[in-house]
Structures are given as C-alpha cells and as structure tokens.
Image 1 (cartoon, rainbow, N blue to C red):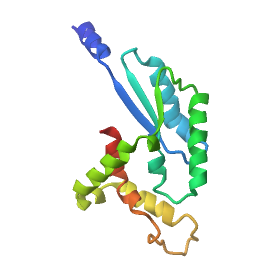
Image 2: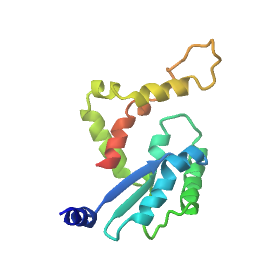
Image 3: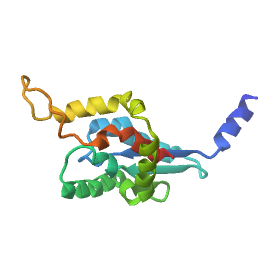
Image 4: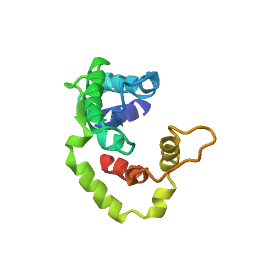
Amino acid sequence: RTESVKHVVSSKKRVILSGIQPTGIPHLGNYLGALINWVQLQNDAGPEDELLFSIVGWHAMTLPQKPKELVESRMDMLAVLLAIGIDSKKSIVFHQNDVLQHTELAWVLNCITPIGKLEIFSIYEQTSRLAASKNLTEDAEMDETGLNVGLFTYPVLMSSNLI
C-alpha cells in the first residue's frame, strides 16, 4: 500500500513558484536559503512538474532605490540565476514586472482587503523599521513618513503572484 501511495504522490503534477528581489548581488544567505534549493528542485523535478522562478521587481520597489539601479539589478539577478544552474529549458524564469496581471490583480485585491488584515503581517513593521532606521544613529528617532504604501500592501502583491 505504501508503494501505491508513493506512486500516486509522485505522479501528480507539481507547480512550484518562488521569487527573489533584485536588490543586488545575492549573498551567501540567499544562496543557502533559497537559490541552492531552486537548483535542487529543478534537478529533481519530473517532466510533468512546472517550475516558475521570478525576479520580483515590483516587490523591490517597496523600498527606496534608483530606477536605473533596479533595472540593472534585474538583469544582474537573471545572470546569477543562470550562472548557478537554473536552466531555462527546465524552468520558467521571468521578470515579475513583465507580467502586468500581477499588478492588475494586486489592485483588485487591495480594493477588497480590509486594512485590519494587513496590520497583522509583521513584514510591514519589520521592513519599515529597517528602512526608517537605515541611516540613523542610536539616539535618533525613526521617521516612517517617507515610507511608501507598497510596503504596507506587500502581502497583497504576494497573494496576486500566487493567484
């Protein structure tokens, strides 16, 4: 019976989606925490599996950066993914920014998502503190007035990627 269960599980098509922000050259933590797993997933995937790896530029825009640098970082990240072994014949590699349906769906979800639901996500609090305190001394107070709303609605954009 165990063998038949394994066969059923292994014969089902899997769709795997993962993304990485193009915020510069990936560091060891990116490699060990995610990217090496992407390569392993790709190498272990069956012919019926679909692997989608995204360079999530819309997510990267939630923190201040120069537009030209973001464009360059997107291309750098693509080069890194190919260099570590992501194979475009086995996996779909795409720039999130090139799929406008992500932002269209994010807008619809933003319009129906209660603010209270977003306030429970810790990503806003953690990232806003980091962004607000980036250039502060220990005695200075954080100023969150320059943060954008995209940081608050980040979980909605994540949801639109999955749907």
